[in-house]
Image 1 (cartoon, rainbow, N blue to C red):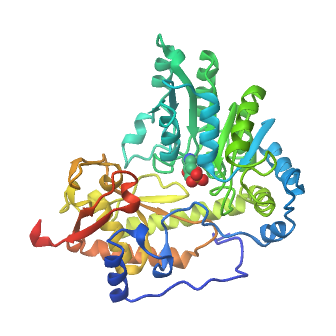
Image 2 (tube, rainbow, N blue to C red; image 1 turned 90 degrees about the vertical axis):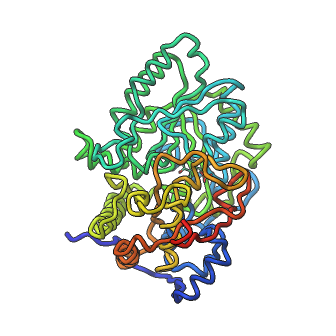
Image 3 (cartoon, helix red, strand yellow; image 1 turned 30 degrees about the vertical axis):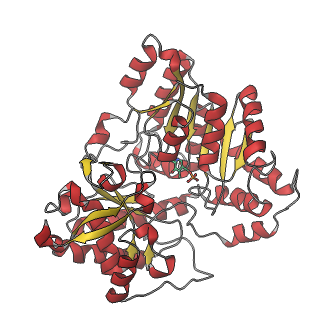
Length: 461
Ligand SMILES: *Cc1c(COP(=O)(O)O)cnc(C)c1O
């Protein structure tokens, strides 16, 4: 059967169609920072796949059934049933989003001075570790360093390093190991079941709690069925259940694979840990049976978690990303290979060799995608990850200059993504015309969200 979206459209939302002059105006007003654009100035919004998915008719119906009782709402028990069935964890709490789950878990689990180890900490995960006076240490597998390599599980943790660190004297200082599935920081790459299992065995041997950051558990499961020997005939749902079963618990932003606009979860096996988490939950999020979410959201979430592991849905979503990856390759633009599911990462540094890192080539490409076609996306390069001094000068560049095209769930059709590829292809025909940027306002924290920039014309470089 040819690949196509396994749903039809029932409710539509017009998208703004703008002129180049309007976009130039809007971008200048936004200080050349896509985060400062208004959504009604954006034609195709690929800034994030978080909380941006389209809900189904069944989710809408479930939302209508939402029970807004303060305590013990029916919605909570429906949510409970779905989570218990999927994860096998005896204790779990709803939270408003992933970072709340991280704050609660780490506050209950870590003592100041301890270390958290991960394949790669997501940025809020790292922040929540560091805010407790702890250290976050990333151990991506060696294959992840080669952007062009086609190793199927570049999200894996480096098992040799993990074993070495946990075996060292003083390793009692490692308070948790967190496996991020898929590995968002590492380009949305999946983690194999073999790696999840081996890391679990090492953690068990040294008595270290082993948790998942499971924001994209279903997408990871799909890629396992496609890429890992022995899993071709296993359903994504069964793979997901197996992954959860391996760990001592999880944190998850359910704004991704929960396909809801807001929601998250923190879950665990240890009843004592659960008690400590529950206190933090009630103090900071809400009572045990709603944790910062409305009954409506809990019910929509329960339904979304049933839909997300449907092979027809996952297969079509993965095919959509692969199709875009092929069109991008045809346009002569390199990506982080192999393509994952939730996003494509464009190698802007390679496309724009005339721009040194200090002129932010990743940012330049992201800005150009907006100017050329109203496509909004985010830089993952020196502007976000580099070391920048108080005068806005780049002191240490990021290892790569990337641009992330994140793909919202069930929102855009194949023709929308073909439009994105065509916009990129136009830019790639004359990449030397893309101008660089310099910072004119650079707040000391959350720089990439709030900074303002100006164009550096070609003759001023
Ligand atoms: C989004 C995300 C988070 C944080 O979740 P929020 O819902 O944005 O707070 C944590 N880890 C990973 C891997 C994520 O993708």
